[in-house]
Every structure is written in C-alpha cells, then in structure tokens.
Length: 443
Image (cartoon, rainbow, N blue to C red; front, side, top):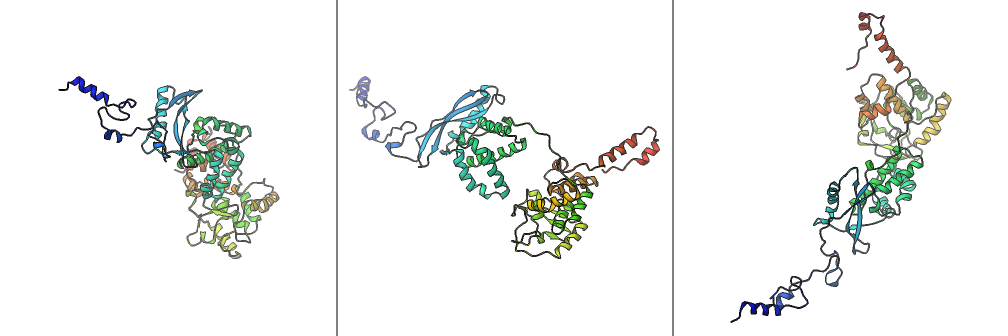
C-alpha cells in the first residue's frame, strides 16, 4: 500500500528537471500532455524562429511620464511598419501638455493614459514612420493635387519658404510644440504678419492630419500653446466714393466697363466677375448667379459654400449688360469675359493694363478690383440697408466680417451723423423743435 508521502516522491521524480512548472508541462502530466503545451516566446520575438507578420503579444503599457522643462511628455513603445513589411518595436515620446495645463502629475497622468491607450486596444495595428520631407511628396500627389488651384499655390509657397527648411529632416512624430515654436520664431524674424503665420500653421496641421489618417506616427501641437507674433495695426482697405466709382466706370471701355460695373453694382469678387458665363445672367428675374470663380485664368469653385448664391441685378446694371452683349463674341465655355483663346481673363492683367491707367488719369491712387466690393458694401450700409441685408448681398458667413472689414465710413457721413446728434442736444432749442427735428430711426 502506497502512502501519500511515497506518492508525492514518485510524482516529483517524473518532472522534467530543466522545465519549471507552468512553462513546459504540469506536475504529474504524461508525455502526451507535455507535447500539446507550447512555451510563449519573449515579447517581440517571432514564433518558432520563423518570420511572422505581427509581433508576439504585447504587454499592457502605461508609459513613462516625464516633466521636461515646462512640458509633460510620455514615453512608450510603438510597433512600426518597415518598408519591407517587417515590424520593429521602437520607443517614442509624445507631448502630453504644458505644466500650466496640467499643474499636477495626476492630471498629466490621466492625459498620458489617454494617449497610450491606443496601443493597448485589441484592434491596434503597427504604424508607419517617415520624415516630414518624404511624407510631403506623397501628400502633394495624393491630397494637395485634389484641392483648388488657389489652395495648391498657397500650400506650395508655405512648404518651399517655411515648412520644409525648418521641419523637412524631422520625423513626423518629432514635430511637436518646440519645433513648431522655432518655426514661428523664424517666420516672425523675417517680418511675417500674425495672419500669415497662422496660414502657414494651417497648412502644417492639414499635412499632419492627413498623415495621422494614413496610419503614420505623428506628433501634435496646439496653436494655443504657441507664442505668436503680435498683430500689426491693420491697414484700411481701399475703397472708392460713389463719385469715383461712377467716374471709373464711365472712363472704361467694354469689356472692362461691364467688369467694373458688376463689381461695383453687385458687389462680386474680382474672380467671380471674371468667372461669369452668359448663362449666369438671368434677365427675366433680374438675377446674377454666382457659380464659379476665375483664378489665374483657371475656373474653380467659389471661395465658400455661402459664396455660391444669386444676387439681384439692378436696373442700371441690366441696361449696361444688355448693351455689352450686343457686341459679345461667343466662346466654347460661354464665358462673359474671355481671352482670344477662350480662357478666363487674368485679374492682374485687367488691373495693371486697364484699371491703373484710368486711376492715373482721374488722379485716384492705384488699387485693385477688390476696392469695388468694399465700395458696394459701404454704400449699402450708408443707404440704410440693415447689416443682415449687406451680409447676404456680399455672401459672407457672418455679419461681423461684413461690418468689420467691408463697411467703411464714407466722407461726410460721420460728420452728418454727429451734426444730427448735436442738433438735438443744443440748449437753445425748445423741446417742441427738438421733437420735430428728431430723425426717424430704422428699427
């Protein structure tokens, strides 16, 4: 009869001496059960010494939270997809926030956990890495080429003059607050305005947004974390008085007379004027349909969705357009204003070859066609139109743009308003006379 102690001795004698319990076979298990057990490889190794598409099972990561100067960062490991299809695990560092945003380590830890949580998800996939310059070449072919010509031109200027010289050699995941702040400082030293700096940053964020959507490992920054150059005193946009605008239209010959009249009487942008077709003129309902705009002799969509609308055609403009259409020559695109090749007329050519000579003869300082749009907005408001009506006529997304940038005080208008107020406050005027002279205000 076998005792319990002798049974334990016999069971222990059957163990494999070099295999610990739980890693090879269970205590007391026979050869058949041992052959069905597989030892898990160490983290990052391939199973059975053969190449696999994915690494071994990852361990849960919390990341290492560090305070570097006034910025919180977190370090953790990412699976990076190589060009040959293999996967390599690398240590990366991500920006968490500033000391001002997260004054305590606990608050910074919460934000760091949100960043690292991506690599702990069951559906996590390896990411790709590239330098900013290499990715930009792909982005220009796959994304920028689909944008409007005006957007393409601005983005290429931003890349050539600012982004590539400063960030081209950096990896996408290295582009954070500090490198972008260096970029902003360089642009400020060159004398760029705050508005231009923001436009360059907008192009950069668009590139990084595309890289993130395409599974690249990308850094991040917030504009609120950057120190931007101080804003300059804005220059007052040029505009004409009613007398000046009428004199310019009268001094011009067709087709420029029709161009200037549409810009001044309907408030269209220069590109919208040059992008009009004959089909956009609705004489029956007296409307002008804005459907496209011309940019350097190329047609594209208008500036925004709000810009695609119909505006009234006043009687004076209708008469002038009918006169112009009597001598209008048809072209394949049915453009209202076209070159001999049938392409849209370039705005710069109209301004330099037609508008400036007229301004010089009339003694008016030189400016662009956009001054007609400012003139139209100012005359609308001065004639008593409500701000909402002016907004809809100019097709702005908000009324603040209309009043803050386009509605200007015409000469004598401010003095006339002040004289009316002072007239009501004169001490030698009786209450009866004051009530009789009080103007009727628009509700």
